[in-house]
Length: 519
Image (tube, rainbow, N blue to C red; front, side):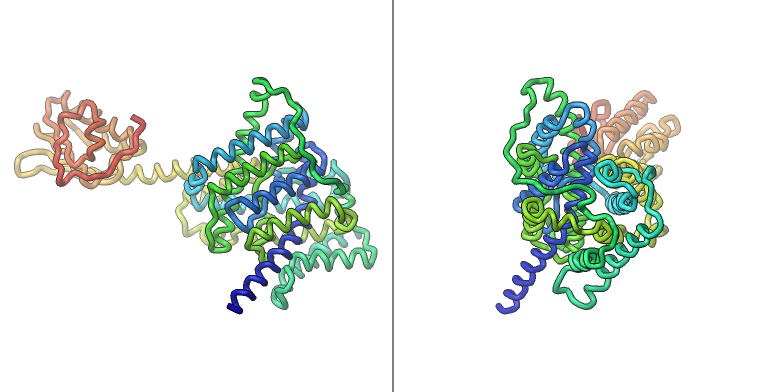
């Protein structure tokens, strides 16, 4: 009993401290993504608070952090520019409704269709994107225009970088932050190393009066409580045609990024979250956020990694992060604005090192070439476009590689039996990718009058396979040969058209598998 209590107290302490650490890292990112989307900083901060609080409370993955993200912000910018922020709020509400429906209809289970190479490519690509985003923090500018180029999807190509003393101070503080985060856990785990690093570096900058950029140089974060606000848009068909396409895209991106992050946290913590409940939680959070002047959001892999690595495992960590962020906005904005940007950059660099799957280099020559190609492809597409596109591309390419490889497995053995019949024994799956190779292995003109095709070692997987069998039956009928089809499943026999009367029925030997078909 004593051990249980100690463990529970330690867990609460870890959740509280890791939540505070995450809240500090949320501030500059929420502000940055707000600028990317073309809205005020408080719109991003309110989204980070509300989405983070609601998903931590009712979502399907304790310990996962949600908030305003760059993947959503880059989609929102065109909507805000063309129609204004009120249409964004309406879009976020509809986005949330779609996500709730996805959870109710249990669509979250389809995340299982994402292959492991796609997962590796996703985390590697996202690690690269987070790293590139931090390079913008070394720019010489300040304010919204400077920060807008530092989003996860932003480009740093046009940033004028620091030089001389300013650059050396920035690099030194970043290195010190990373040093503390890496080595402090070897001495003590009483306080999250990321939080300790932020406090130490902030104390040095303030104590010695070092000239370096702080959060306050980016934007002011002071504000009041979010207020209920119904989006002031016309409730007509025209409005729906404007916001619906954006809502579908945002809902899809939010669900994909959240569920992939959920899977990653599952693997790290060796626990299991609920994908469908997470969809509902994300949806409810976005509906509420849209009615309270927020830009919406989804799971954040960087902050989730900070939380988990700092010891945050329970829902209390996410709730603490959201409430601390609100306290920053209401009461402690002047203190938070004193934190040097270098400390937060150092934290994010450690997130990059922890997120990137370094083992992927080691396994490149050990996994199939198709999987290695998918891993690299998804990483590149994630960096160049966005997460949703990268995952869709990865799944499609993986499916095509799988189909191509299994299309080679179809094999037909030909022999004559004691009755003078030509017997073909089919081995391997018969589906859209293997139908051509299957048909090429038959020659009706050279076969005996009586022909038997045995499917005992084969499986008909789709409608293309059924059509191939019908085509084969037609060829033998046109050649004046008698064709027998053995060991086809019951549903195959029902769906075959031309070959229906040629199928031999043997209840004892016929397999009980079923064919997937749209017929």
